Amino acid sequence: MEQLKHECGVAMIRLLKPLSYYQQRYGTWMYGLNKLYLLMEKQHNRGQEGAGMACVKMNARAGEEYMFRERALGGDAISEIFQSARQRLSAFPEQQLSDAAYASRHLPFAAEIYMGHLRYSTTGKSGLSYVHPFMRRNNWRAKNLCLCGNFNLTNVDEVFSSIVRHGQHPRVYSDTYIMLEQMGHRLDRESERLFNLAQRQGLEGEDITRFIEKRIDVCNVLRTSAPLWDGGYVVCGMTGSGEMFCMRDPWGIRPAYWYKDDEVVVVASERPVIQTVFDLETHQISELQAGQALSVRQNGEISFQQIIKAEEKRACSFERIYFSRGSDRDIYKERKALGEQLTERITESVSGDIMHTVFSFIPNTAEVAFYGMLTGFKKQMNRQKVKQIYELVQDHQPTLDEINRIIGGQYVRSEKVALKDIKLRTFITEGASRNDLATHVYDITYGSLEPYVDNLVIIDDSIVRGTTLKESIIRILDRLHPKKIVLVSSCPQVRYPDYYGIDMARMEEFIAFRATIELLKDTDRRDIIDEVYSLCKRDMDLPRQLQRVNHVKAVYEPFTDEEISHKMVEMLRPKGVTTPIDIVYQSLEGLRRACPDFKGDWYFSGDYPTPGGLKLLCHAFVNYYEQIYSR
Image 1: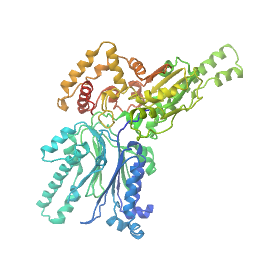
Image 2: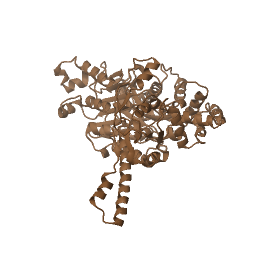
Image 3: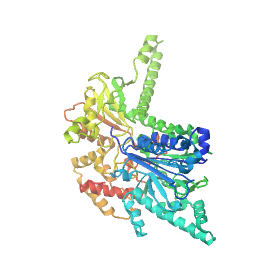
Image 4: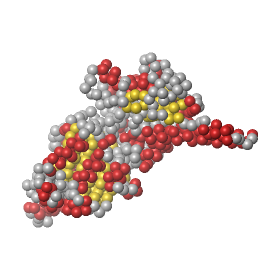
């Protein structure tokens, strides 16, 4: 119901053959460029605020450009950057465009290494200057660095202070830019180490350059940079001399998958994207391990090195519920399981009257969970039919009519009840007009249930802020006059902010938190709020490494999930709507059963994987208490 801004998407391709090989086999030297476009387009769901791509050509001579980049803002950014690249190529005659050897030397974007990025801002910062990839230029090819990633660092201030102490003067205060400068500094040191080694061996001039470019090791750069990072990240990079790398955080929070054969090395944020673009089976795609780096040397040599010791894996569970494409084999099964195991709670909510209940979903990523929910009720109804037939045959030989009445008279009823009708237009900026328009974003299918007789169960992947429910969904569903509205969330109550890539940074954003605060006030327990504030205020300035306790958990402890959900209904019920309403959430245990390998559930449990997350949580609660409305 409520679109979340979230993790970015990354894609990288390293061609392992000369461009002439792809010209001969696939009919174009643009094989890598075309595949990058497909990888990015297939991950469009991960970033609709901007996109960028860059490449490095490895056969350029001195005086010839060898790094190219395009960036754009907006939902059409992918098309724009590739159209811009092709426009630059259109200036060349057809004979040169079709000559792979000429292209390799002279044409822009005729390269061996490609990098793409899709951006969803999670820090509130926007504009072309914040769109990846970021570039750091130098006259030494080996010291040029291009960087992009899917990450949020929780300790940007710490990394910033570190590079300032080394004498640098960063021009932009953002995690990507600061990471670029930090890694750039270490890349300089790695180059200088090899320069000194080459001189000791008696090398001079271009021989030194070739010596450095053949031996530079980006894993050394990562080993001296990454230990300072706190957060969830997949960092991708390439150097001007032809080194490529991708590294994943030691908790495995952010996703990364790879594939290699004798033609290419590919990295992307999602597995089915690589499968589709390269026509592969699931088992052919591998997951980059936590704390590990994949690197490709200038000569095409591929290695996997453990940069940081892997911690307990805490891969993001929201990836499975919401963000990643549901076409992934395992994600599809997990989302169906999330829906199916809600059967019992929903049955209780409609008092067991499944015969007079219509099931539907809000048209978004909840569709797969909806299928799982239907599967659960079909199984439940089949069990009831078997029991009824069994009891019938104990008394007498049943007739066909009797059996047909049992089998044909009971079925799970599903309808397309809600549909997205229009997109809220941003040119309406005046508050009252915007809110009025928001009530019409969704529409309903009239006649899809029997008024005042049928219950309406409608599932969504998450109910986070509740704004769309109150302003639009509930009022529109009420037009059908159901006996009862049951709103179902396939994930648990979102109670805590995220600091690893999702745009959920303020406590007051969450309807679960707001409802709990109201319950504390209703039950004369304001002292709990004050005490949590005092503890967070005390701990917020502690060093990151000393953060140990989630004090905000105490806010939720006095109440059950059901009590909090009931309070939500009170707060979200639009004026004039009298239909009984219930909100059914997935349990935390249910989430863990459905997604057993994805234990990153801090949004629901408050169990942050890194101390930086706990530190920022303290800041968030203090900001809430002191009514400081900033990230």
